[in-house]
Length: 183
Ligand SMILES: O=C(O)CCC(=O)C(=O)O
Ligand SMILES: [Fe+2]
Image (cartoon, rainbow, N blue to C red; front, side):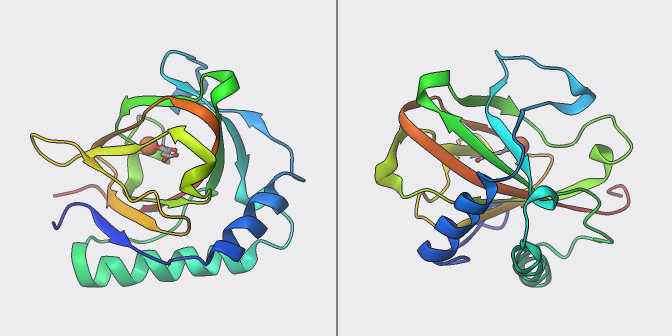
């Protein structure tokens, strides 16, 4: 399928554990949505900005390479920049962690330029129940691989959700690539 591209083994299990451990030392914020509204019905997660995580330059380099490669081979979008920090999200069952159906394209000056979204699964699938990333490229939702270290990349305008985490904690890493408006 062209619209949702999966990259198995984008990061190794060891790298994922390293990213989670480093993110736990950085300041966490409650997830803000486009427009800085806190709406717990829409989303419940703790978010850390990768830019606030010490020694994370190699993570950003890897993300840029992954996005560039799949854009060249699959999407061919006009991408110009990575205009915002990637985010590490933690969805906790104890907190009702989830993210309801949404598109990543917002009204803000930066969010309106989002063109590709990429999500990396940082947790081992056995560490949580629920917490599926589902994407709607057409009439049916597709479920992203739960494999630790796999990346899922899709156009930012596609609706997607994270189903409620029923047990344990799920960590993910999301990055956006930006460019001029679609035409
Ligand atoms: O955590 C995920 O799997 C998705 C995150 C997401 O959709 C977002 O940050 O916009
Ligand atoms: Fe999203």
